[in-house]
Image (cartoon, rainbow, N blue to C red; front, side):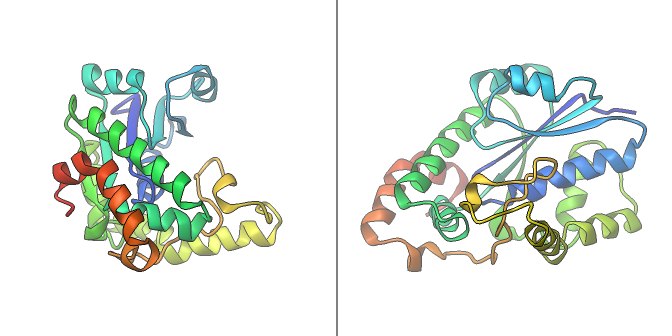
Length: 237
């Protein structure tokens, strides 16, 4: 049976949020196979999301910049919220490296995400997953996510999902989509596989502190100023 009708997966850009989103959807499908799970990306509770979620028993919603309506639902309804975070400077650097965004666009995206996430968590109690802890590797992150959702997974189920969503398996899936022509030569950041939200070149290298070799001192200073409150809240220097 459905534990929750809506689950919000919020994340800073490039913080493992797509992996988180897929884990939540897989956990719900595994533990409640008779139910219809709609896995959707959106930054606002709007007509498009309503259409895509029509008939679903469980809505798994991925967002980077949750709007006021989404924040209100999280605050007032007890909807489970799971949050992935990362050092904002590395988030900017990763967007530039993997998806070829220019610095200005990447910095603006991360700034908006930081601000929205702070407003989201001010009114709810999310499970917080920190990229630097490598929660996407192994089974520990999956187990924590399932527990937050009130789901208990067996050892075999944990290993199944860990293998299904390992970086190697996801990279191979993306390679197959590219080889088949599903992905093309357009910028990576503007293409995705909607059911999973994987983009071309999505799997990163997991490096921490990469921004020091990617961003200039002026760019680092700008991002620092834009994300000061977020960094202070989560302990990022």
